[in-house]
Length: 317
Picture 1 (spheres, rainbow, N blue to C red):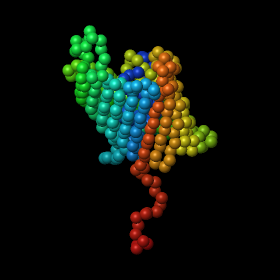
Picture 2: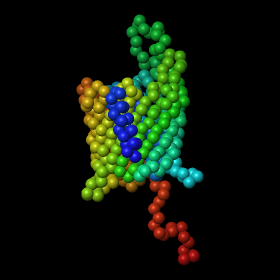
Picture 3: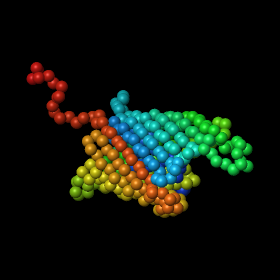
Picture 4: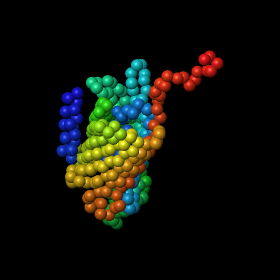
């Protein structure tokens, strides 16, 4: 187990030193872990349906907007534990480009030490759309550059992700590769590829003497080994119902890229949350900040035994 911890620590360090990838960055990255790492499918032990919406740089026209949704659950087959999930992601990076992806996830579980190692894979499709009708060029370039689309262009490609995730009662760590095959898009006036990206996550659950409170620090790193970003988060949970957290985001250009405030609450089977982040870069001078919402519905699959049968007929008592 010490080797696993050491390996993940080295990976965290290398990722940050290497210098983020093209993927959307959610403040509630733990809720969006199904987007980043397919090994997380079914990790809660229940059926989870989650949706996140992020509006970047409020106040800007054509600002990036991201919508992610997933449904995942565990199941048992041939005396082995598994997890499955489906994911959908819509990422409007600008008025010019939009990515829409959908995939199926499978995770295999194996008990290891005091925790469980999960190995996951995702297969799916990515549709990239370039709104060439929105391109504005100078007269000297208009119609002369074949790399600049002049009308709407759309292309679909096969995509694949791979991930590892290890968790105990006290801590967890994971690593994943997105766009493993670096799919190429080759259409008229749209020649590009989706670069491979890597992400790493780690966190700890600290139970205080007051059993009503729990601290959940975590770190999330995204990189393509050309650029990187990291989120360092401190989250507190009260009575397993209410939560509040602060997150510090950094990238290769600045040690403080954004400050994030998070709030959340759980009512029965439903959990919801909000995040606000304010960038410290020059972008922050022209925006009111970014807003993010998430909603989660959890359906318990393995109900605890009560010792009473609700289905027993009164006629045979």
